[in-house]
Structure formats: C-alpha cells, structure tokens
Length: 114
Image 1: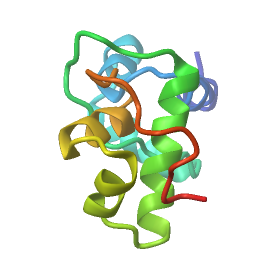
Image 2: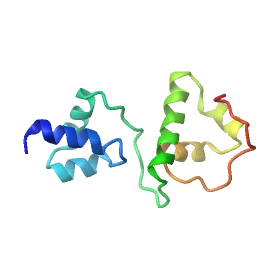
Image 3: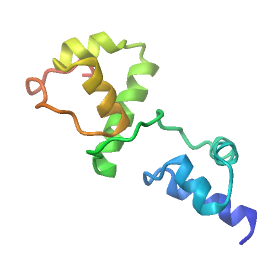
C-alpha cells in the first residue's frame, strides 16, 4: 500500500472513532506519525481520552466533541457548563471525551450553549 493510500485510511478511520494508538498499531506507524498525518490533512484532534468502561456511540462522541470545541471557541469555562447543566466537572469531561455520564442530565432546555 502506498503512503498516500495509508494516509487516506488514517484520515477516514480517526473521525469514525479509532484512537491514535489503534491507528498507529494497525498501520505500523508511531503515534507521532499518525498525529502528523492528521495535522497535515487538517483533521481536528479529539481531546485525550482515558480508558473508560462505558464508551458511547460515535454519534454521542460527536456531541461531546462539539461541546468541547464550542466551549473553547467561545471562551466558556468548565464551571459555567457545570452550573448550567447541573453536572459535576468530571461528568462534563467524560461527556466531552465521549464516555457515559453516571447520572441523568439537567433540566430540559437548560443549557449555556443556546
């Protein structure tokens, strides 16, 4: 397989939810090289993820990523989101990482991101 084709596969698999270490292992690359490929192709990086037992679907992972990027692009600090959602900071971080929060969401329609 040529490098250009391999790079296309990396760029397709990362947004679908594969982690950098998984892509590196499956394509015989270092994690640094995978990061370079993503950066070169302008693929937005996800926040670093920790191993969690309750990973959500790709759809909910995208919602968490949207929250993460929206929060930073608009200068909304974590504690504003904590107050608006009535979740803990840890739960907000888990949602941003695409993992399942441990309790129900705050009141319907109550959100700092409107």
